[in-house]
Each structure stands twice: as C-alpha cells, then as structure tokens.
Amino acid sequence: MESFYTKEDYSAEDIKALIDNMVEESIYLDFKEARALGQSDATRKEISKDVAAFANSDGGIIVYGIKEENHKATNLSFVDGNIFTKEWIEQIITSSIQRHIPDLRIYPIRFDGQVQSTIYIVKIPKSLEAPHLSKDKRFYKRFNFESVAMEEYEIRQLYGRKIKSKLIIDGYSIYESESDDNDKLSFIFEATVNNEGDIFEGSYKLNVYFNNFQHTDLSWDRIKTHYDYTPLDNGKVKISAVCQTPVYPDETVNAIRFFFIIEKSFVEEALRNMTFEIKLFYPNGTDDYSGTFDNVLAVYLQRMKEKNN
Image (tube, rainbow, N blue to C red; front, side, top):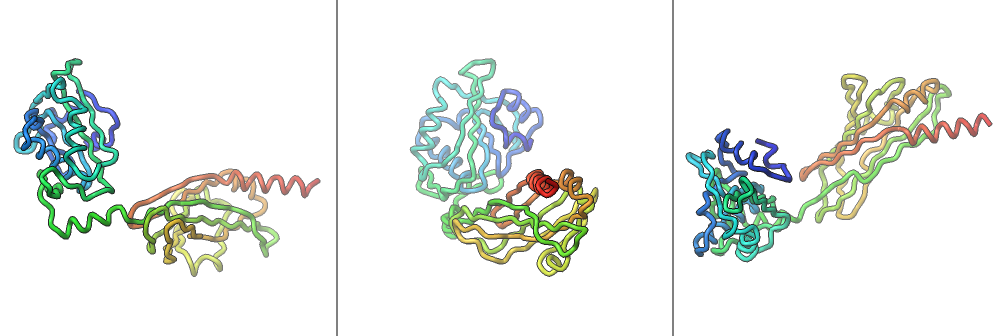
C-alpha cells in the first residue's frame, strides 16, 4: 500500500483495496465512519484535532467513509456529498485550525457516480508551518492510531521545523588541465553546493560516481589525502568527500575537486562512453544529479581540429 500515500489521484478501486486487504490504521493512516463528519461543535473539534495532529507529525491520510474494526478497514460508510461537500470540509479545516496548512488536498470519490455515496480522502502534508492549533486551543500529534495532546517541549521543538538548511547541488564543471605526462591528458572535476535554507549547515557528504571508468585513472597524489576512492562493480568507481566547511544561507561552496587522467589514445572513446552521477547527503535530505562528458568531448574535438589545421 505504499503507493497509496504517493498517489495524486484516487478511485473507488483504491478504497475497495483498503477493505479487501484489511489495511490497518497507522501513524500515517486513519479511517473514519461517515458520522465523523457532522454539524455539531464536538464533531468539528474532532476534525480539526485529527487534521492538525497529522500536520504536526509526519503527515498522512484520513479516509472519511470507511468503518474499522480493531483498527483495520472493514466496510464502506458512505458520506452524503450533498450535505458534506468538499468545500464544507475545507471550510471546517481552515476556520478551525491555526495556522494555515499549506498543500493539504481533499479528494472526493463518488461510487457509481452518486454524490450520496461519497468517500473523502484528506491528504495532509508534514507541515513546515507547525505547530498547528486545533479548535479546542490545544496542540496534537499522531501516536500509534490516535491523535494525542503534545507536551510543551514537543510544541517548542516544532517551532524550529521551518528553520533548517536545504542543500542542493548547485553546479559542476569538467575541464582539461595541464599534464606532466605526454601520453595522458589531465582533467578536473568539481561540484558546488548551495544552501537554500534558513540556517547554516556544517555536515554534508558528496559522492561522485563515474560509470564505464575505462582507460582512465585518478591523480592519486592530489586525491588520496582529501577523499575516499572505492572501485565498484561493472567499471564503476566512487569518489567521496565528507565536507566540514559550513555552508551559510544563500552561500555556494566548492564541495569537491579532483583530477582524473585519460590515456591520449583513448580520450575520445573514454569521454564518449563515460557518464557520471553526483549524490549529496546531509541531515535534512538529499539531492542528486547525473550527466555525460559530451561537452568535454566537444571541446576536446574542437581543439584537435584547430590543432590539425
């Protein structure tokens, strides 16, 4: 059921699959009978509490219109979409929860095209605007199968959720450099990292993978003291850099720079066949990029053409 959480569209078949497979509620999934949507003040408080709890936690989905037994989906419990519309649910959420939850989505599913036979899927993201206050003026989180009140220290921690680093691979360059060996050409590979976040980041790692690493080698005297090198299967190698230089908001730093050399007689073949991947790892996430050496090859061929002329 992992794909259920990442879908951008839902159908009656998705709902039937939950019941047929007796899918269990979790910290990310909650089933509610039709009566969970109602006009009473108590019902509205429950809606706001449950939605806010998901947003304050790691996000998740509430399905309005499924009965559960022992926390497992068992039967359909249709919502009358004429009375409880998508707009009505949106209004309850926006008016009962402080602050606004960005990117919340509501998907109405009509069985047999009947509005009276509606299931609502409310998809709630992990909110960077947390903490969110429910209608009863309390903060909630998801715990096991429930929405439970948060401790004071947990609420304080949520205020820092939005303030974090966000690193991206900002760019790379590959260009030829001078070589002391007349039989080989030397190239430099470097990549930069940018911090799009709100605070500095002092811990990150960059891996560069070369595929089809043939007739090619690394300049060991310039790499071994700075980076880790690992030969992998199928002609693939990995160069790793654990970076200690802090990256401040809106700053770009050169995260990795190393030399590789190619035998002159195989330069065109090597540059044509090799590809590369860059993977960035840091506490708040990852980023990646992949490319070819086509531009380097084009520059090399143009230089050879000019030299021969």
